[in-house]
Each structure stands twice: as structure tokens, then as C-alpha cells.
Length: 171
Image (tube, rainbow, N blue to C red; front, side, top):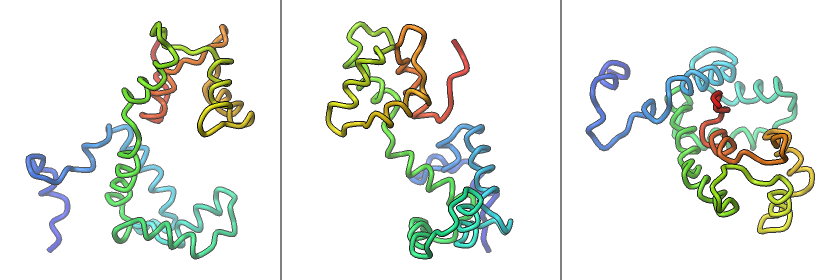
């Protein structure tokens, strides 16, 4: 007997295992559920190789190899139901730096703490330092995160989007 639903809802937070649903806000869980439902093409409650192939086809990528699909499926500890799917995203996102860490990295370029960076300066840094961006990558970034009328990048909003996946609707 598989006691899956009821006991987990109780109060299992004191123990060593953390509830994957507590890692996300309710709106995020709903978005993951929608994504899972879209990917679960045959609606059996699990994402399998055929579901992945169909999902890729729906996105316009028709010739995905079996090896690539099997590599994706190997990332899961077993059959991919919604809880496993959510856990996998949680583990992937766990590697993402917290918002504060990303903000602190940007603050190096913003000693006055204005919350914005000059677009041309950040472009220069991105194209000339460490893992150099190409002109196309910088253009794509500014397309996704447009500069304001003064030519500044609102890095606080950018950090929010990186860590939360959506724009702050306020301000």
C-alpha cells in the first residue's frame, strides 16, 4: 500500500526530508503543472520518451534522437510523475544563485547603488571580460531586458526575473 497523498499533507516538515512543494510559490507550482500537462501528451500522468518526442515535435524539433531522449530520462530517479518533475526542477534551480548573490555581483558595477547600469558600459564588460558575449547575445539580452529611456539596464529587475522567472509587476 502506497500511502502517497494523505501523510505528506500532514506535518512532515520537522524531519530531514523537505517537501518539494514548499520550495515553490503556489503560482509557480501551477505553472509547472501546466508545463507538465502539456508535456504529458498521452495524459497518463507520466512523462516518457514518446511524450518528450511529441513535445519536441510540437516545438518544431522533429528529429530528436533516442539517445538524447534517453539521456534526459536518465536524469530522473524513476518514472516522471508530477512530483518527480517538480523535484527535478527544484534540484536544477537549487544550483541557481540566490537573488542576493546575483545582485551583489551587479553592485560591483554600481558603487552608488542606483540599481541601474549604463547599457553601453555593461555591453562593453560583457563583450570584453571572462566568457565574452557576442554582439548577438548582448542584443538578445537587451531585447529581453530593454534599457530605459536613459540607456540604463535595471539590474534589480533582471535579477528578479533570473531568480523568479517573471517580471515584478510593481513600480
